[in-house]
Length: 409
Image (tube, rainbow, N blue to C red; front, side, top):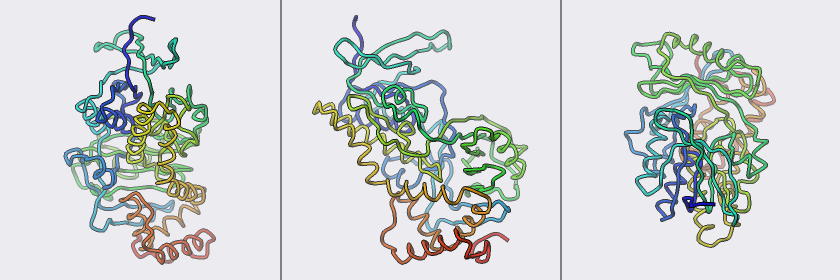
């Protein structure tokens, strides 16, 4: 075929995973194309832990709110407050956060281009041909373009088109569907609303198998819900949550929905020249749905693996991204998956789960693990106490709300 641009790597998708991967490869001196859809904003609560802020040098101006506690709400509307002792969780607006990450990658040498991935073909010599549709600034009819790529990173979400074509396991990705409404934060006092506190609702009528949330973002607030139940009305649940929270009169800024994966894929690469990252690889924490930190780490590891593959010509290097990720976080994902499996199955179990969250040991270990993104191994006695209480709650040996050190009344 005629002349065609060639890149060491084409990164499809410009969210936290793709932007981080493009940035890492560009910093390493590789010729990288970052291909992203125009105007795409992922529905997300926007929470990032201190570990992510430190590891990826997130500037303070991107932190639109600093959450200092979480309120966990049970099916019976009882609540538990979980304060963060001496720390905070940063909240970001994905519209601005993701764009900043893409711009950082561009400043460090990545080529940015807006376009929609169409398919991956092969040139005569077997090199990947990434075909995409590019639209003009006026939004008119798109033009199909193609570039050659020595390697490709698919960071294009849970329904990754790259993954479905090149990594067959991604076609059976389990996920929940998330929907949220970004509203203007209340300017007057509303009972129960606190701009420095996240709310997580474990109530079957709001989500039969996941949870609903109210996450403050400074001037705006995310009100959302997730569920894998295809017959469940997510919009109806968000409307009910807004009504019950006194947020029904707040102005709606935008509405967004997208699938969120529930389990890392067993394989992230095609054994040749394609590697998946972020939601495309399934790296969203079960139970919590947290994904920004894991996406950025996945992007970093993808950049490292692709860089090694490019330097050595050995495609086996691509598998190192998943291997390193699962070594660092596989146990956490397994534990959170078990938590979701056991505690989200009914309102009776959710009631007991929220009760358990009132326990000081549970709160300390939860925040320690979340803030630093690692299991806390220095407190074996606390782990043992939590395990014993967990079993007691699961089998009903402790009555709901019998102990409520920090629970609402």
